[in-house]
Image 1 (cartoon, chains in turn cyan, purple):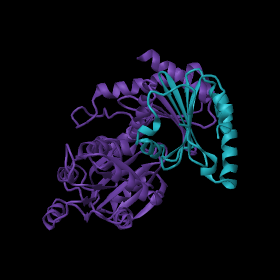
Image 2 (spheres, rainbow over the protein chains, first blue to last red):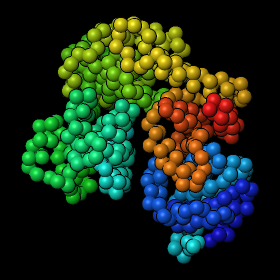
Image 3 (cartoon, rainbow over the protein chains, first blue to last red):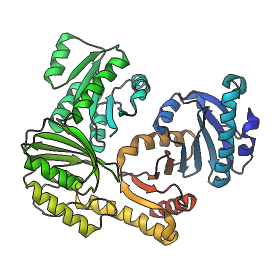
Image 4 (cartoon, chains in turn orange, red):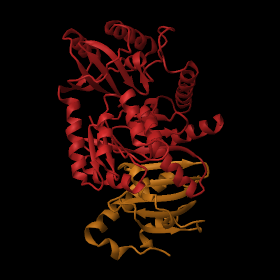
Length: 118
Length: 349
């Protein structure tokens, strides 16, 4: 549900969020601006997930954007943001989110909770 | 020691399926993937691979050519062939070419895993040791005139190397893309290592002419002179010796590392939490994937990556022709360091 990610999406310069399962399946996405192409159109996300090699946290800084990746109990959360996003606040929000996703995993079924935005 | 097993296949689905299927053995070995023989050759230079599993029919360089390359340059690395076009003739050619195993597709992943594990066990059939000084141990090998292959891992950097002994005589060495004496100097600069002993030496040619004792003494001297903070110094002992790293490359590498270190010292000072800075292209696979993601989002060039694997150190990767790895204490001032290095990259471009 989008509500889970509201705090993160409301941070300055955040462009969007994706949640991938550990097998590379896109469980949820929400972007504040339209993407030139939908992530589902590419089949290499699984390979990217594998290349993370179980990392707890990955922060990729590009010339024009930043991709923050966080391992959760449900899979890998990826947050796309601009270079001015408040990264410390982002990490703090992710700490809180990881804890609540952990609760969700133990109390609710995954499919009931997430619906893909189309 | 977690080994590295390279799987070479142009079928991406097969690669990912094998990596998935072999994940359960990740405490014994990690899978390195290569999409064809040429990529495999490159990764062999940059990674300490313990075993290769290769398909036969691949573009650019097929499995037979790769097998021949491995037999010539890495005779200690066993090769298992997997192929969907299995014939008795092909199996005969593969085994005559030096393959230690041949499996026709489709196969059970457990069968492949069993073969891999049996083969890897031979690496340490003579025993393993942890936290030892390589110099002391190697002198013992010389005294006892042992014939063996010794695989070492540097406790500090995680770098891996191989030494080949025949009746106590050091024939060859390989580490960090260096071979011969250069490889030996690299290995002997490591203070504390884990090592495993295989009671065989597939290397027949003596590529190192100097005596073991002389190399050990000289490596110790070079280490003392260099202070050893960034890792081993380039080999400059004797200009007539065969040193495979060019002076220009070494100079450039030292400059990049020195510049980053100086910048961090200046901007952040003592509490920067810096553990080590070194070049390590074993991250290139991950960097390639991250670059692809950046391209998808039109994010521009990848400037750096911060990786927390839940280990004692975190890593900052600075992509380049030679990837620079900055190993930091997880409690380091991460955002300040990232800002300094990103700024450094901007000014150096």
